[in-house]
Amino acid sequence: MILISGPGIVRMLLSFACWGVILKYSFAALKNTAKGSFIPPKINLDTISSEFDIVFKQLFVYLIIGFIFYKLIQGWGIILAIPFFLFALLSIPAIMIVLACTNSLINSINPLIFVRMAWRIGWGYLLMYLFLMFLGGAPAALAGSVIVHLPVQLQQFLYTIAESYYTIIAYHLMGYVIFQYHEEIGYDVDFDDEEASSKESEDTGDEGNALLKKINILIKDGNIDDAIALMENEPDAVSSDIRLAERYYNLLKLKQRIPEMLKQGAIYLDLLSKEGVKEKLYEVYSECISKDADFTPSPSSAFKIANAMIEHGNPKGAVGVYQGFIRMNPKNPLIPKAYFLAANVINNHLNNPQKAVKILKGIIKKYPDHEILPYVRKSLEEINT
Image (cartoon, rainbow, N blue to C red):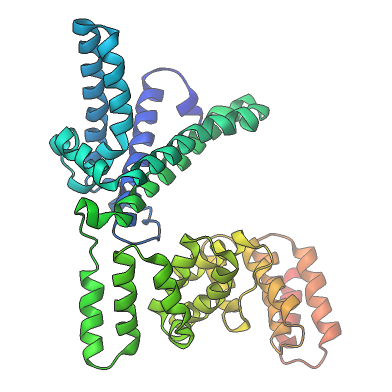
């Protein structure tokens, strides 16, 4: 942060590198969404480094627009330059979409291609542009209403974070427009791998894969509501097949149907717990708890979720899972274990032995005959020594 906010060539190079990474991830998010996946791409070296030339191609797009604008001012004056600039400004989302779809600088700046693509989308393109304007102005609005009241040393840093966040959202929106209008613009939404798997399993009588195939076709055609309705009519399949549970959860999240999303989230977490998918356990639980602070997973998955929280460096979140389990399941025979595990996290990860001792003594007092007491007494001895 100090280097980025400092003067000179170091600041310029670091700023360019940071924005390059953000733009590359934004293009990855665009492509991911355009293919019908509503899960953010992973933040790793492969996502950031592969096809990084697309960042430089976007830079060249802006340089070409600026060069033409400059030449028009020189040769024809501002009267012709301004209409060109307005046309270029309106065309930038279309240019970026073509660039992302083809990875070709030549195609992206070809008016015959990007204008035709925007025309095929129709009014949806103008609606997307309106939302992109809102997203583009959001960092400035946030700065004027919130960031300006914070310490000066933080203002530029937080403004950059806001710009990065809204840039990723903007590219995600463009990806969704590609996905929604893929037939009109001739973009191939690739479900080949899943559909091939579905076909193979369908032949062997796998009804879950047959249903998934129908859902994928609906999504590919942009019929998100119909896909949700189809899954709502198959509650048994959605609650037992992890692929269907994931698809249903993601579509509910996409449509911002929060109550249904949280209900399905608990089901999806149960299936993830059975499969031992710790990365997803952490991700899905974090999403659900961000939508509703009182969200509580089922008893069968709570302990595994807490372990996943610890492994991902969020011990406070793990304690929250244990506390939620205790609050929502007061007669569950695993309550003493939940108290015991919470105390261990508080002592070992949150460095609060006094609170841990209080919890452990409470277990001894409330559950004097429980089988976990030898472990409780051992923990107390270790803390007190």
